[in-house]
Amino acid sequence: MATKDPTAVERANLLNMAKLSIKGLIESALSFGRTLDSDYPPLQQFFVVMEHCLKHGLKVRKSFLSYNKTIWGPLELVEKLYPEAEEIGASVRDLPGLKTPLGRARAWLRLALMQKKMADYLRCLIIQRDLLSEFYEYHALMMEEEGAVIVGLLVGLNVIDANLCVKGEDLDSQVGVIDFSMYLKNEEDIGNKERNVQIAAILDQKNYVEELNRQLNSTVSSLHSRVDSLEKSNTKLIEELAIAKNNIIKLQEENHQLRSENKLILMKTQQHLEVTKVDVETELQTYKHSRQGLDEMYNEARRQLRDESQLRQDVENELAVQVSMKHEIELAMKLLEKDIHEKQDTLIGLRQQLEEVKAINIEMYQKLQGSEADLKEKNEITARLEEKTNKITAAMRQLEQRLQQAEKAQMDTEDEDKKYLQECQSKFDGLQKQISQKEKQLVQLETDLKIEKEWRQTLQEDLQKEKDTLSHLRNETQQIISLKKEFLHLQDENHQLKKIYHEQEQALQELGNKLSESKLKIEDIKEANKALQGLVWLKDKEATHCKLCEKEFSLSKRKHHCRNCGEIFCNACSDNELPLPSSPKPVRVCDSCHALLIQRCSSNLP
Image (cartoon, rainbow, N blue to C red):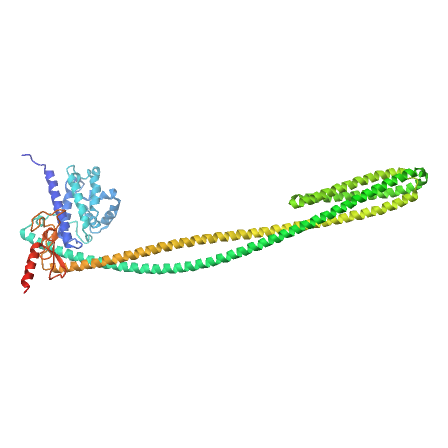
């Protein structure tokens, strides 16, 4: 016979004790149905077993006064590995009544159980075996697989709600002894436990039905509140839709007004443009007529110049005849020289005036370069005037040359020359008058040009104003288009809200139907519970075979309770429904109860 390792036997015993304590604690806590206190015996035994498990295989640390062997060292290490455990460590250190490390470890276990994180904290320790080797031997329970199994079992303790008072307890001087009598079962204890279990099952069913009723009432109240909120939101949406419709109607009216104003403005601008076109055409016609008058004047001046040239030719012929009278004309020539000097001065003045006219024409030409196509004709007219003035100057030069020749030739006839001079003076006065008239005409033309420029500027300003009004109207039309888009968007949102409202109404109707069905089911359950108050309701876990056909239950062959006897049957053996005295509605009954009830009914009949 091979001897077993004593440390392995110790680990197995501790593992089995941990399984029993955890299982008993969970079952008793669920049957108890309330939060656990520190005086609850299974909970005290659980802490004792956990203390033994954590102490197994601890290394002994020597100090100056005594040997130190506590579990507070590895538990204190959890704070470094799991940051959420810092609160437990700090609260344990702050407790005033704890003086020993063992008392701190016991307080730490109780706080971890209340937090429902004992399994998480110990899992962090088991993973870090290098750090645990400082506190435990290699054969310790926390260093082997049994420790991982215990940590896995501790996850089931998250179901338990515990409220433990750590401050008032004396955790330093407690003696941890395992009470095995709690885990040894007698027949009487088993019977009492079965009765307690049945009573607990009935109480659980009752509590479950009450909780269902409360939940349904809460759901009904929440649905009513939702319906009220939806009605309020619906009324608000209807009001908002009415406001939006009124705004849309106002915007449409403003749009019609703006369109009518735009049409009126366009009509006015078109009329104004037509009037301006008519005025421009009339001015062009007047300008053409004035141009024709000027052409006629220039033609008359040309004719006069031709007549004068012919007269000069006649005079020259007469002077050729009167060459013989040179001696008599010498005195007259002296006088004529004086007159000629005066005439030369006048000619110089005329030349200066002509140069000034040229300068004015040049300035007018420079000013008229920036005008439009209609002013080009005026520029051509000024060019023609300049050409005519040049011709006049050339003619005057020719006259001067001829006068110089006449000065040499005219020595004979004083009287005729005087007459000729008088005629020349009269003609010269006429020419001066013509020049003054032409200057007046040029001034009138300048004023006409200025008026035309001013008129064009006013037209340009009017056009700019009309462009500004058109741009403003375009902006307003764009705003109207954006408002239309917003209106369409609001309509889409309204349709979506209506759809949501109808869907919610349908959902509320469905919920109302479900609630009515659930209320009927609750009434059925209540009636069934009333019927079952005097019966023993067999637990599902205890039944593995059908009582009549003795076939084993499975996924296809499910369990069903008989509402008369409380036993569990399969579907084939309990597919009957009869009204019982406790419940007027038909309820599921097994075949044997069905036959008995039918016999009773037939015997009661006369």
